[in-house]
Image (cartoon, rainbow, N blue to C red; front, side, top):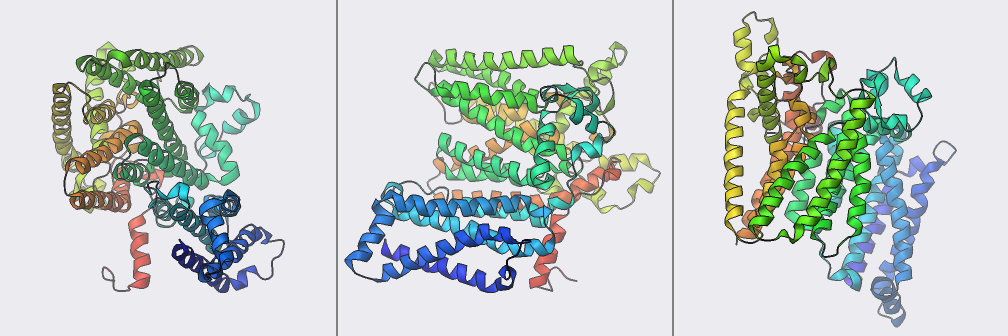
Length: 597
């Protein structure tokens, strides 16, 4: 214990001294313009003093030093609470700074950033030290040790490489400039939770929440906050269910490093889908815990109902998840009957009925308050074609489904798999008059889409067969549930009429529910692979390889996605960020000859 305390304390003290030395000019003088820096300096100095004392005591072999160290790091809870309170306060200050960082001028940010970074590092170092020294924490699994690194890399990607603060714009002033002030000044709070006529008749609860939140932390701050909430929720709840490090890390990485919500850089309301995915995860977790619990009723049922309320108010897209609940429930009833585990059916039925009650009230309000079927605009649905255009409705649905399925399944692939590379190479292809040649390259991806859909359903059918062959709970049956989420995908967008923008598979926010299902599939398959292989090194190697593919795709795909936007006539909406170009520039600062000149 003394060695751990000695060297971690020395590290903490050196980090603080080096930061203060380098940033000496930024804290002198402390005036009214930068007095907020005291929120960092005071806890940092307290931590420095405390851990300097620990460092000295760790070198002494007296009874007093042994008693003090044992009290702090092994026995007494009061010192633990005191040090933890200081480090948690410092972490909160750091997190708040990182969230609102884009609202600061560069010269101000250069003053605060080192202290916020130091505060973040100190918190995790203290947590790790206590987790290896305190008796109550020693034997607990340290599956979370990579979490601070994951959070830091995620923030670096979006803040520095993508630079979301330069691209995100407030949604309502941008899209509903003529109406939003009237709505927010005249509507009562409860009216904002219903479909709003001035906003196209949509249920805009998620966008309304962003509107008020961004007034406090900025539009980019909402992005960072929602992503952090999703990452932490997915990570910890998946661990509680599966107890698998590989699954928890890969799931979190899939959900927050993917490019599926890049449309937020055009319409910032898309950011709400990170929070919506968080709510989906909570609903799945509470439903699972309630059904699994041996008690007749548990608090998880109440939590499920409470979580459903913001879910249904968030956006109409939640109906995609509701459709998945139907499909998963049907599968579970059949599966539980096959393996003779019908004792779970009653609770499964309760969960199913709760979802249906919420959906029924939701749809009733939509019908009576404004009208469910959108008859114009971007969301015009295939039912408005009428009988004379029956085949247009049928083929639009088929095309939408295959497009959305392909968009989902290829979401984490490198960009060469999602579109024509020849199209990407051609600049100014629209100047050519031969529309058939243009169409050839624009729709080239459809060859792969057909193959992908076929392989997906062949795999799904085979997994279902294997699951039903066993007379007990199969380790593969969760995979079936996750694949059902992918298969159901995006019903609310499948019924929207075909538009030129759908000519290419680039609109990831259509398939947010499918992306969650795919992320769960990928993470769970690596979990199963790890369980079934004797060579754990091989399992970790392929897991790391998958993570690298996702990280590479996260900085390479955006340029392809933007080019697809151009190809379908959406160039007027503005460019996407290019994190790969920013990464190359930063690497060239250190290595001037990187990738030529």
